[in-house]
Image 1 (cartoon, rainbow, N blue to C red):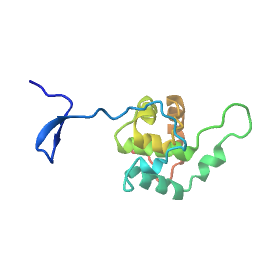
Image 2: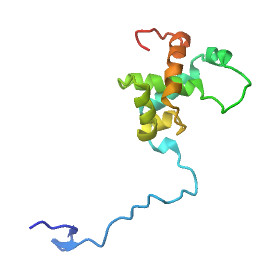
Image 3: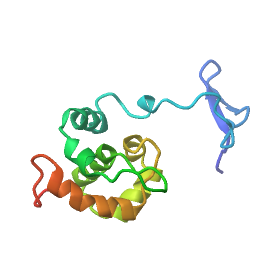
Image 4: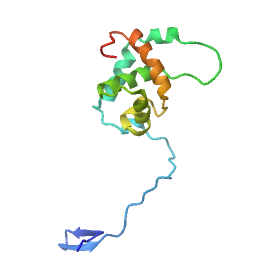
Length: 141
């Protein structure tokens, strides 16, 4: 016979029925936005990667970007570069898989700050990252 929903009472040394289940509140609205620094431990690779990208000279990306025009603002090239480097560290090369992980994996969500780029944007950025990233050769990117 299988016993479901019982807990062991340490004081009494016997099994008793659980009072209930923890509530699952998927529709709960946050009063404040969640702090992404709480999502990963302080020694996670993502934090090191973000700090490293901040000190890299990425001015070439800014110099070559198009200005003016219409449409939505583009994605920050430092964010896209971080996504690619982290994905390569994890052995992921598919832009479609990177896009999917930006919605489901906590580390990828932190890297893109929950602003998920589509796979076409990632794929179009990849050649720019190869030619403009300091010390990045075709073998590694």
